[in-house]
Image 1 (cartoon, one colour):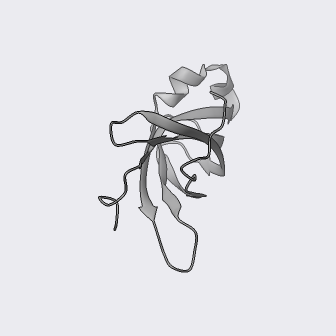
Image 2: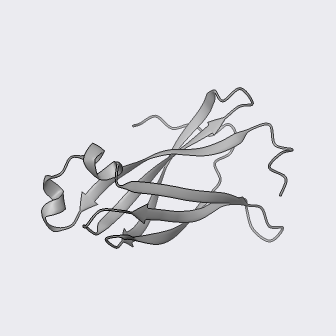
Image 3: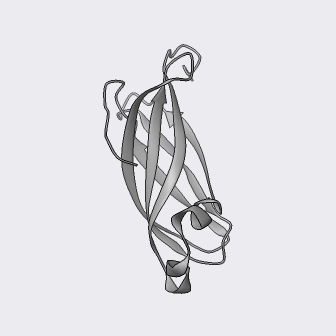
Length: 114
């Protein structure tokens, strides 16, 4: 891949969980987010727009649904130059993972939010 050639690095900075199942609704977002992990890679194919594809891993005992990723675009000195929020409408089973695929944010794309 041409990741080294890119001046801008993409990083998935965090997850914001908006909806939980069952008794997990009583937990705070920070408690649930500490149980989640994201692995991703940039896919740049000639047929499709560049995408970030990967998995959300859930180490908790609860199913997680309606996950929103905060994707930060970083420059060469690791400074955030853009931030985008992306919904991934997946259910992540307890102690399991779910796949996602989102369009890579453009370098100029920015979104306000948390």
